[in-house]
Length: 405
Image 1 (cartoon, rainbow, N blue to C red):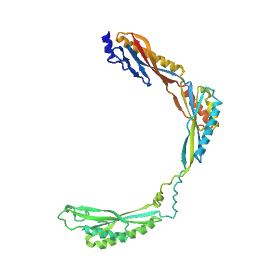
Image 2: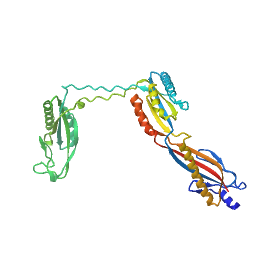
Image 3: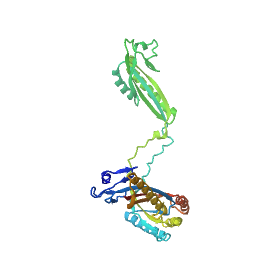
Image 4: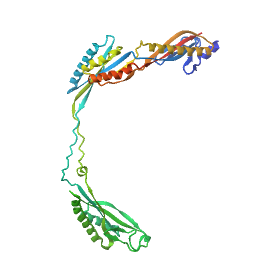
C-alpha cells in the first residue's frame, strides 16, 4: 500500500482533463498547494485526496434590473458644465428615490467634460452668369518632317502662331514595301498635305508632332469663327517653314459645350481653423432594483428631471433560485467525476475537505431607449418588456476536494 501511495505522490493522474488524484503521505511528500480559477490558494492535507471540478447551468427570468439614466449639458466653461450636470444628476437621483424602495441602490458615474467646436462654414462658389463662356473649339494640327532637327523650331513657330500646347510627338516607321504608288499607305499625311519620303532602301522613322489650337465663345458658331482661322494660321506658318521637307495640316477638331463647373473651378481653400464653442458634460445615474414593474414610472420621472437617454439591463440576483440550481448541478457533476476517479484506484470517497464555488450570470442588455417625451417612454416600455420575460443563464463551476479512504 505504501508503495502504491508513493507512486501516487510522485505523479498526477488526470481523468478527462478535469479530475486529478493527489494522494500524499506525510513522511514522503510535503503538503502541496493549488491555485484555483478564482485565484484562491488551496492547501491539500497530508493524506490521499481527489479534486474534481463540476459545471452547472440553469435558467430563469430576470429578477433584477440596472437602469442607466444619462444627463448632459452644454456650457460656455468647464466649471459651469460640471456644476450644471452635477445639479441635474442630483435631481434625477431624488426623483428615482421617490419611486423605488429603500432596497434599491442608486449611484452616479463620474462626469465627463469635453470641448465643443463650431462647424466651419462651407466654401461659397460664385455661380457663373448666363453670359459666361459656354463653348470650346479644340483643334489639332499635325506636322511631319524628314529630319528631327527641324522639330524644335517648328514647335516654337506653331506656338507663336496661336497653338496652345503640344498634344503628342514621336516617330512613325516607314518601310520600303509600304511606299505605294499612291502614297496613301504608311505615309505621314493630313487632309491638307501629304509628305512622301523618297524611295527607301531601308526602313526609316519619320518624326512628327501634334499641337492643340483652342478657342472659346458664347455659342458654337462663335468659338468656330475664332478657332478655325487660328488653326489655319498655324498650318500656313508650319507649311512655309517645312517647304518640301515635310507636311502640315489640320488633323482633327471638335466643338463641345463647357459645363459650368468646368468654366469656374474654385481654388481649394485652406483647411479652416477650428474655433472652440464651449464644453459639454455627461454623467449617468445608475439605479439597481428588483422592482421591475416600476420601469415605466422611473423613465417618466427621469425624463421630467432632464434625462436624455438611457440603457436598461436585466440580471439574476445572488439569491435567485437559478443560481442555486446551477451550483447544485455543478456540485453533483463534481461528485460523480470524483467517485469515478476513486473507484479507478480501488478507493472510496471520504469526507469533503474543501469546496470552492464560482458562480455568475450573463446579464441581458440591448434596451437603449431615447427619452424624448411620453411617446418614447411608452416605446421603451414595449421594447424592454420582452427582455423582462426572456430567461437568463446562471452558470456555476464547483471544485470539490474529497479525502480518500
